[in-house]
Length: 470
Length: 87
Image (cartoon, rainbow over all chains, first blue to last red; front, side, top):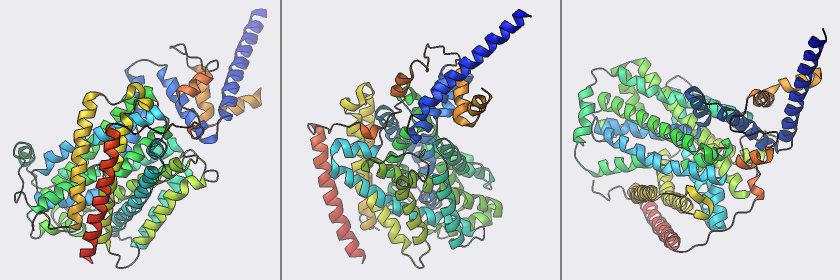
């Protein structure tokens, strides 16, 4: 009898001790600012997972750490990107652009991987690093460029959303309103952990283009395989070909992506211990991005290419031909992919605006901030979404001119953003042992140099369209 | 004690603390004792309050800045010329 009582007492004491320990940690958490407290809870989860060994635990840890890389790459397949890939396929068919898209994988990976290391080591976003390391002028220049480019890009996302929704019988006003409500709700009412998972779930819809390939009637897989051997350019090298190469490069890396992934890595709370997982995340994202791009090129390259006027078709016309040749359901799925592309990019781009403004101006900057407490953090991103959602409804708006301006602003801004990235990654004072290695610098300099030349050429060709002949 | 128990049971934060309490540290890290180290390692700090030194502009970085300035000026001139031709 005494033994039972003694055991009970020991159990009670242990329970009390456990509760005291838990309360201690809870008190310590409560002392942190609210955004950091929520991040600390997420990091506690990672800490617990690190205590476990085995392949399954390692996989669970990886799944908890991935997010920013996949999100940024899928969001890069935005409405403008989907339209560019669709037009690329319809103009050039199955040939050069399929292996070309595969080449974009290392390009995207090498550039974006640097943002993971920079964010994990410094715990600061790209805008903050430029502002504080290189002064107010370059900080303000980068922020202003980013905000302008983001607003203009958001307009193209809303064009994609309203256009795609029209195929479901929804008017532009209603679709713009729906998109605004969805984006506002996601940004304001979700904290980072749920925000990331909801965004990733929306991003998963981007993969809708991949199964669509199997609905292509009489698809010649041999032609797809041959494209890797021949790199055949339908119609040969022309000014149109150069323009399309530059447009595809332009959609592979956009300025907002550098800012987004670094800030996202910081807000998620990744540390130097998580760099490896961040790299896997970025690789997976690059892989999905390229997979979707190739799928779109295969679809339109097989179905639309060769149809009269295929070298100069709008996305409406491309969708119309898809519905004739593949059926209504594949066409609607394609339109759904376009809507999703616009929506996920709107979420990512508006978040990048908010993060960058917060970082540059020294505000608390986290999606973990409750809306009432951090309204000024959310404001820049939401205002830019509101402007884009409104502008797209203006009748007879010069959309072509807007698109052109986006490309020009990006081509001016991109070299600056990438050079800052390279400078920061070679800054031993802040990067320590995580500084770029020799091979990383060689590959990064080649890619960044190539992108700078191509971006400059692209900017020039959009304002001087006949520079490379007619 | 019942009240405390209820308090600890609710929410993601509490679930995480409970899990932490149930997990057996294998690498010797004990958060109750090493909280400050955990906060430091995980970067759970307000970095706005930590000043960042301005970079010294020398060597190839100086060259990169000049390249940027020239690139931007050339691009802006080209854009102005191009846009004025469009309209």
